[in-house]
Length: 89
Image 1 (tube, helix red, strand yellow):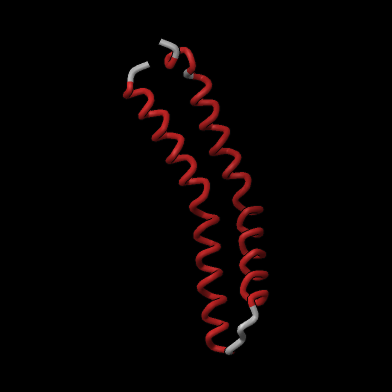
Image 2 (spheres, rainbow, N blue to C red; image 1 turned 180 degrees about the vertical axis):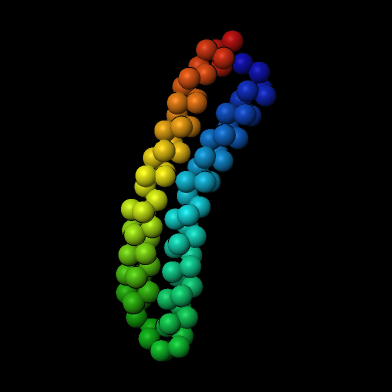
């Protein structure tokens, strides 16, 4: 196995991890910003007021994105395991 193959495998793994986490992180970020704005406008300083809606938004995004995420990780796994003979050289 040449260094180029190792770099390619690591690059694909990191890109797959990035694309799988990006939608969930974006939803969590946007929900956090919106809840912080609501807290600023209403002067509510309760930490549960910020955490619970953010967790619910994250959970809803996870449930909605789960089929896409499973398809993406399955495609990556099939691609990686299907090329084992190429990596064994």
